[in-house]
Length: 115
Image 1 (cartoon, rainbow, N blue to C red):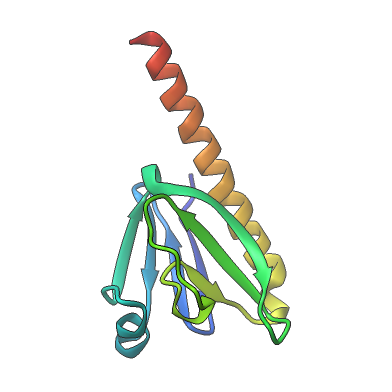
Image 2: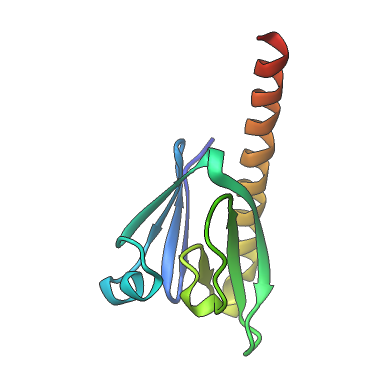
């Protein structure tokens, strides 16, 4: 798996072998209640989607198992807004995340059958 990086207007996401790393400014991290570098391992990632903000901008949302529900997407530690011109890059990133999640689920299912 090649490492991928998505830069948004309010943070960035790195796709690594261990999971996803969200990077934010100190103030953005504080408003979301997370550390500046926030790691989510693959076992907790459910899926990734692209939604549209109230102003029509694309937002990459990562659904994380066990994460508390956030009323406002503005304070969601697992959402990154991207510029409209970056929609294709965002879609590639979402596709890669979903592919990685599906692959790991197949591995887990195969391991459970073998055990």
